[in-house]
Image (cartoon, rainbow, N blue to C red; front, side):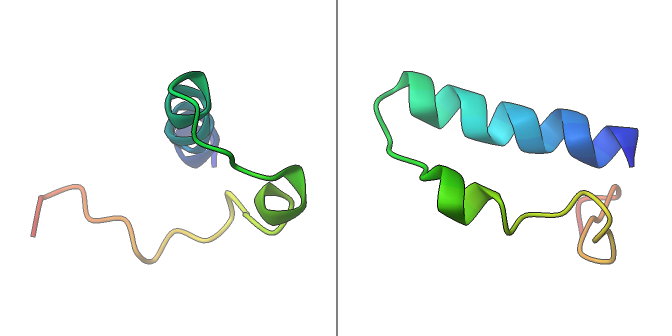
Length: 43
């Protein structure tokens, strides 16, 4: 879970710094507990 939390934060921080509007209402639906989609091998 710490891995997901760190990278979710980075995935939101950079676009927001570039001016992309990520609404807090939408971000509230994200969960660091979902991990079946992560593929560390790049496949």
